[in-house]
Length: 451
Image (tube, rainbow, N blue to C red; front, side, top):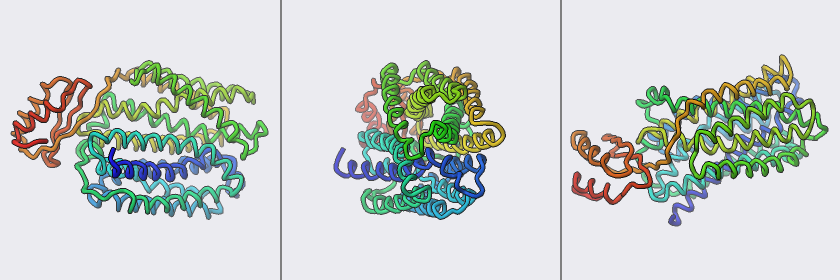
């Protein structure tokens, strides 16, 4: 990676950390801290925890497409402004209703797709995987940091302090986007951002719908967990500011479990390991539902939950990337992200309704039942070979491209070929045996110029 790519990767990763921390910090504290509001109810707490997911789900694809028309930075800056406004509304809220309004407005700053597209614009294809890896690590780090920091900040400044800090952090991201990330011409986005014409076909893909429903259930479960778990911990005489002392060893243990699962997979994402991770989460909810106020049962259950969650959260995007047709990964990931955020909204609503009418233990059992049904869906998931994607510039006609695609498809390691004549791009899905120089030779032969 050259200096510009390093600067861009670090800046975008920092934007993700600051923004996602703001969304995550309230999750481990809101269910307890919200009891001080005059209109408190479990249903409103659930909406406050998951409300951001509704607008994130609705606007993820449109905002990504908009960045193709307006430019990456203007859309990202607009999203950060909306996110900051929502944060300050939630910070000044004197009721849960107003806090929910702020959370929903936070979600309207749906800029994940635009940030990933900007990362693609500012990096060379040979270095793009490293840039994306840095951003991916930052997202995971922001979750762990938020879960630990949220209770401590809430103890000092309350929920209003968390939301106010979130708004300030969003504003701090703006100079990073404007001046720290290099300004370069936008690249074609067929494999990065959603394309309207591909939505229907990918929505009903036999394998992709399983992953979309899976990530919906995955985030439904973590939101359901965080609506109930803080209240469960309070019953053990753990004050809110001391919750981090439980979360820290749990997260460390779950990371060790994640490393073990990844080691079993040996860099792949085998179907059996995915099923084991989902089974961990199923057992965790069953344990929480039956724990009868035994602290160590709760600790063991939460370790199992986060071990499974961490593995699947890291693995599902790679599976979507592998399964999506060449040149259509952007659309597939946009649909996936929409399901992901809607799952967070659904989890909050479901947890609130169940807790309002029954008990927290019932909500845990609802999670166990949902996870059991999820296992049946995952049984239909096929094994996926590890692939990578490459793209080449191409300015030929549709007629010329047909012969070129046929020649490229016969190269060793090429699994799938797609051309986008309007974008001037050819996309390939390839294995490790792919010879890039052989592909370049074909391109030179068909176009008379180097790719």
